[in-house]
Image 1 (cartoon, helix red, strand yellow):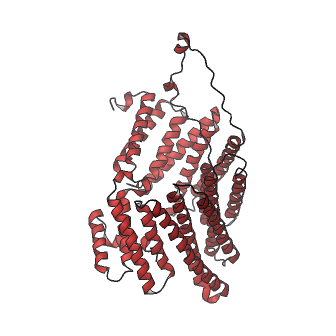
Image 2 (cartoon, one colour; image 1 turned 180 degrees about the horizontal axis):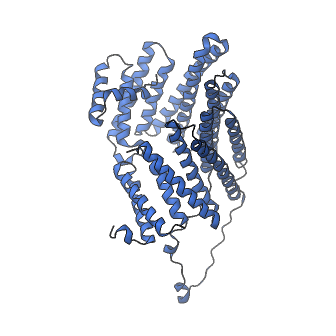
Image 3 (cartoon, rainbow, N blue to C red; image 1 turned 90 degrees about the vertical axis):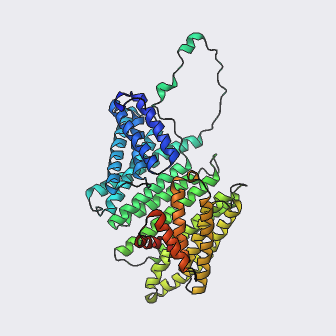
Length: 494
């Protein structure tokens, strides 16, 4: 940077901040990325001091603060995260007040509101994690976030309907001869750098809003131990599905994306039912077996939908679609296993619960085979995707939970180990910056090594090798073995 920050003009500050953001994006995560983002934040803050009435600057500053609050490599302390979220909320509110005065474009308000709601949700999460869920601030944040989610949904739905019901006809551009005098009046694009581009509401955008609303509602229900908010959110999801269904055949909406959206909404609806069951138990109530059946039914409908997607996949889409199916089945299995363990607790004294647990056990065994089958198909499409091998390892390791004889568990542990080792060798051969933010090489290798060590715990004769792997993790990442043992529980699935 050639000048001191105090000497830079508003436009220079904005441009420098954008450049630093781009540099941070290139590093994805890590200390360098974080420093670039933090410096960009400082420049946005200076730009706001120059011009406190720029919607776009306020929007970008609060957006970046929100991004930093979720930074995990390296992570912020809880106190710093709380401060970042507080600042993000504050500046999103100011941006919203500006928009109300100018009312330039609805898309601007939707994006800013979505960031505001997300920041509120995350800040409430921090309060819950730090045992402050009973504070007025926590419930005020959640209730306001819930109301704003409804506002976002209404705005998005209106925009989506307008775009998808109006026939689009492109008219040929007018051919106008430009004189020398006209050229002098041509608009300089630099004058409009501070404007927010027009936004299009997508199916994914609608789905994200509904799911965010569900997450907020579930947090409210957990804090209050009250199931009524869940009932209202369940109705929202039903309404959302019906609304999107109306566009499936009549308008030019991608049916694959639409089906995946339905699957996400159905899964969220099933999650709401699971949360309802947990809250009932937490409040000292009895199991609602009808609601349990409803959970399973919703997941089954979602399974049917995602199978339809698989049937319609085109050549070249096998890897993505098969992984989508496998991931959905594995999430379904996690929920079924939770139900299975809870039913087992009350099974001895309740014949219905005992029978329900037996049915779930049979269903889980069949579903594991479906998940493995889909991941194997994805592997055929790309046998150099380390993540697919890791997913196959997870399938085998998680299957250990529903088998009880040592021989079967040993075979499954051995299968899991084989897949994790293949994932490890693929990862070691890849450049670090080919990994996404959530799956960087340094983190991915460590996780796979830990999972491998977990799998070795079920394989006879692997005791020494397991010890060596744990010592290597300790050497490379300076991890304490006691901490490692604690973290290992996350990967044992047992």
